Length: 88
Image 1 (cartoon, rainbow, N blue to C red):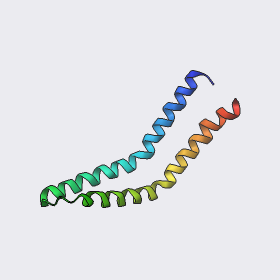
Image 2: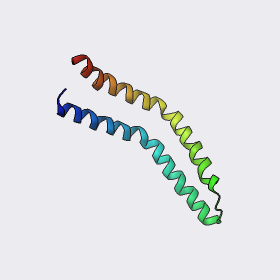
Image 3: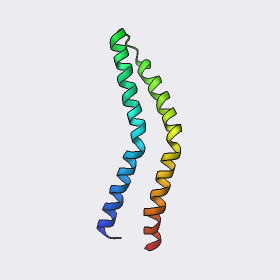
Image 4: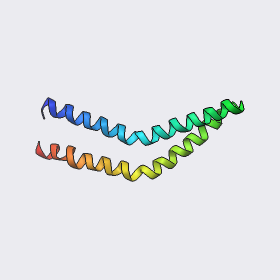
């Protein structure tokens, strides 16, 4: 394994990590902004009001996108990692 191959695999792995975490992070961001606006408009300052809906929506999005995440990881390992291991 040469240096360029390691850097390329690391770059691809980081890009896959970003793609896999993006749906969860986007949902957390949007939910936090919406609940923050609601709290600012109603002057309700309850900490669990931001935590519980955010966790609930993130669990739903995680459950829905699990097949995408699994397919992405399996594709990366079968296309990139395993051929490098077998080729060594």
